[in-house]
Image 1 (tube, helix red, strand yellow):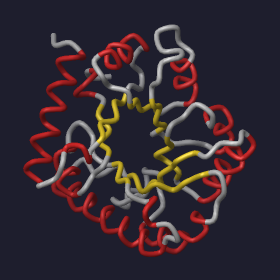
Image 2 (tube, helix red, strand yellow):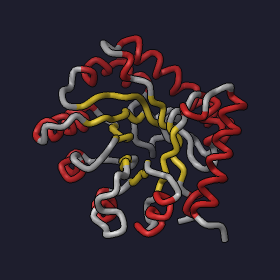
Image 3 (cartoon, helix red, strand yellow):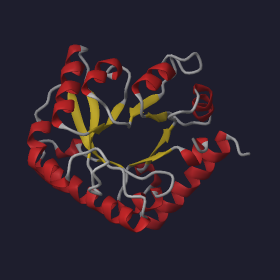
Length: 229
């Protein structure tokens, strides 16, 4: 069985290869290590191997890990990537580096309110349902472009870009990644500060190469690093 360090090195090599193939700099793609259901001890192994961006999907698990003896006080950059209910934002707002999964305007407003109450500025991404699957969260492309102005106006938060979870079919996924990249450009064209909106969080263990080819700046990888759940 390979160690977390060995898995991390292999993933980084694959990211490098994918970037070179796409004519992109590896420095433009950040690896988010998705550690949901995995113990804090494995996250510590990844951190010790140089991985500081960690993604979590469930609020209670996120809180337990941030307070765990193995991780408490370490400069981990915590990314919240799962579905986030408005009534749970107050628990994570002062602990998270970035929220990837804001899927409605009301949730963004609550994040803004809670960040302001703590005198913080929190970075976030809007989740887009690029596949159109009813089981998935996220704004439709049409809703995103229609409501974009309301997101730009929120205080104490900074919109950094977009996130999506693509279809399991690789051929469909590549088109959905390209759609998200196109939506990012349309969003930037509407934004009062387009220089802030640069991030595309897309691609996971099974499809991150296609996401990088389409312009991903963050890939969310769990299984390839920590093993199956």
